[in-house]
Length: 211
Image 1 (spheres, rainbow, N blue to C red):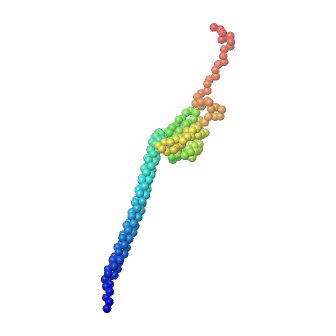
Image 2 (cartoon, rainbow, N blue to C red):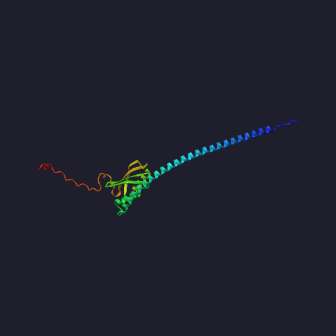
């Protein structure tokens, strides 16, 4: 009777199975490590992108804060001018005179328009200021033209001005007072100045040489 020893074959199969399991384990570990590295790289890219967005947002916030500060400065300037006009309004006497004209001027000023100067002379009024847009200047001119104190409102100067990093419109207006409007053909004459008295005729030639 022939006997066959199967132990070496079984041992070889066990070794082969162990090798396959070890190979599968190594491949699985490599896949897991690869996936972990990919996820880590993705997180790094996401974090970098988020940090850039945060930095850009912080820069925009700083720019907005700067603009808000400049607008607050302009609002403070407007408040100071308004206080001065309020004081003049409190000193108003009646409904006529320079104080009333200043009150009319203050009422005609729209938002985002600020006056920087007011000059009144016997021949008219000059007003200077700044505004955000030309439309605000045009609205201000219409309000003055429709008021009971001013007429012949004209735009003398309109130019670009940069103040506190903001682009504004600098303007100068000239106008006449309704109760002192200059009649046509008499623009060179001062309405408050009396007419010059007539000069006496020159003496005859004989009187000029007589001593």
